[in-house]
Image (cartoon, helix red, strand yellow):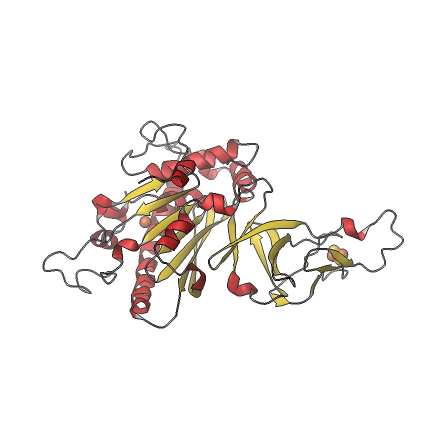
Length: 378
Ligand code: FES
Ligand SMILES: [Fe+2]
């Protein structure tokens, strides 16, 4: 049933998927469009930049980046988490080069010192500089928000708050009884993929390629029931694991079976532009898709567990990590092929399966909407 919250979060489709064309090759390849995406998309959306585990004590700070914008996240002496551009207001040195714990942040260049609230506290030998006032030279703040184990930041002042962007995700996770705040990072794997970041996201957002590209995964899923539900800034994939068929043996015919109970409670979310959250009954995996250039992408996979090393879910998560690695290798091959195909003089644009690729079309519509908008879309 649709709730009012869902209505408010309805996806915008300027053209129905059945009438739409895919992004053009140029939209994946052009360095100029890549530059525009950095400003119009990555500087206006909530990005996961750190973990709450990095900032447990007052005085903890951790540097991070949103593409190539250096920022620093701080656990203030008043207990609040905040963020700043990691750029000294003097001549642009950096005030945090590594994780640490201090009562102030000191630039390593000429020693200007800032409080954990960003205020410039000490700047030696500036007293003969005309009209210079310390209060005008604090670190520039960056918006932050916390959800579960993740710290988000947003470089835009006019972007909607994180809660609004996440829509029904937090309430659905809470309703499933998932212990979001107890999640601890247990494993991280990084993969470099030689493709545009949108090629990778497109691929994540449809199940259409599963029968051909992931034969082992295809055996596990109820493909007919696979679907993507798009909302304003995120989509939810429903990818039920199918039951064992008569005569099939767990561990022989089927590699990845989550042990029956709670099976239907798996939740898969993608949030525009580059974050995927996969929730199982007792663990969580996060995928981040970080553009490194028009033709190069870093994908970060992280696994979180409430009580590492314990319970029946632990074994199943370890299996899940190995299986996810296999699927990722298959996806990397496909994405890199697509990137080569996009460069061909023979290809400009394609069409979507209206039945299977509404999620890809939703993402591509958001890309176009953000690139075309003067203000951050709401
Ligand atoms: S650049 Fe930071 S003190 Fe000079
Ligand atoms: Fe895939």
